[in-house]
Length: 286
Image (tube, rainbow, N blue to C red):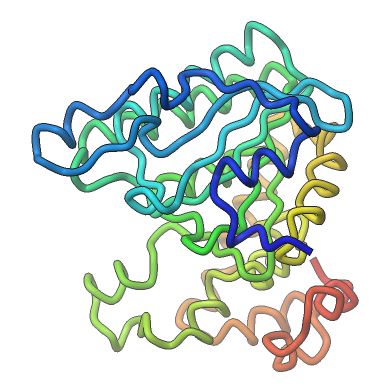
């Protein structure tokens, strides 16, 4: 077993797709760095924190992108976002079997606030265009940094989400909520609380993620292969279903996650935090 969370972005790509099949576009050798970070005197990365390219997965052509959580928390800036948009726009032209996004990001970089926000909006629009063309977009979440902010929204715009039990997905990160509304609202040091509200088990049980896997690259690869034909046409019926699901959660605002799990039909919800992935999957609720 190789921990997905402990791998770098390029290590994940190399182990996830078919061996030797990844061809990177705009690699570090081209030194495509953020102009904003340089103006602020902040260290840059030659790939701006994301690797993009083409590969094969189980012999099938895919486009792939992997965010590097070790560079500025995987934050999205102008160049980072432009690389993602370019990948998605090229997918419209070349029609791969799927687009895989290995997401690990805290959201938009504060150093490039406006440019980053615009970039995320362009990523969302390009992603939805790809979905409308019938090309599935699969997001894999399992990095130690989680998937938050604008990238959390991007993930929920995709066809299919694979998340590990230690992965996290949300709009605002725990530290952001605490800084904005105080520790009484959300204690970011309460790790059990953090995982009950943003963790992979919770996201799978509430239907925000499609597949729950162990923190294992092989498990992510298997789930990604299974998702290659998992396109979900964006229809009014689908949007209404999602809206109804989210509306129903308002009744649990401020309540413990266990109350929501119980309402969803999870047997013995208090046991969920102590169960492994197999144990959670055996509950049969999703």
